[in-house]
Length: 123
Image (cartoon, rainbow, N blue to C red; front, side, top):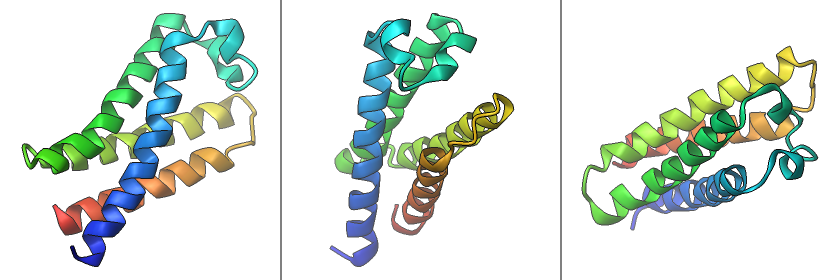
């Protein structure tokens, strides 16, 4: 395995783990249980929160399954780009709400951007 390949699996794997957890939480928890860690859920209808959770979980699977099976590997790049777009939207939402605690969003944006670069280099 070359270095870019190993780097992709490490970075994409960590990103996928995060989004599988975060997406799963949004799908199964109530608004009341989400509120302490995601105050923005009060501004959105629960079906939208649940849809974001499903999209995050599917994106996480998209980072790993296509390159693993070598079937439609380009979907991993699409998933990584999707996470970049998602984090731009999330950061914008936080800033519009007056929430300046965006360190996690910026970290996820940079990690997703790195995953895009690694995917274009490796896949």
